[in-house]
Length: 125
Image (cartoon, rainbow, N blue to C red; front, side, top):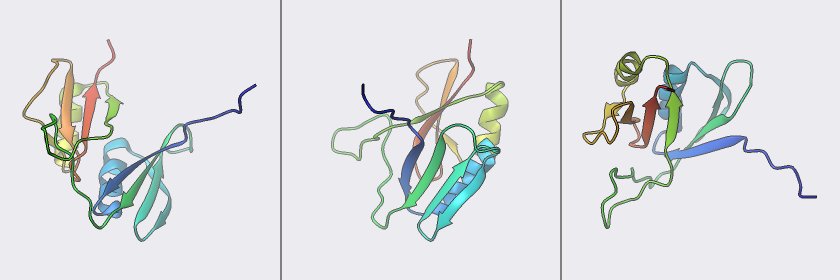
């Protein structure tokens, strides 16, 4: 029988861990669980579900999306379910996100967080 493995935390590298943590705290309504000078852990109130950690890296280079040959490639992106796509996009932009020029689907919006990571807002059908 294999050991039990549970995905607990997704870590995003960035130039400023505390600034990016503030963005995601505001976007998701999450709370700081732990922090160090170059690292912050946030999670939903009540401590349920997956956690998000932001890790400062001195030589951080933001990814490019859509991907371009020779440019820094994204390694992952976050999908965030919302109940009102227009309101959620407005909320994210007010916090410092920016919308991607290329939007591949009508029911999904691709945005970039302040560190340049792409993330998607979507409404479940």
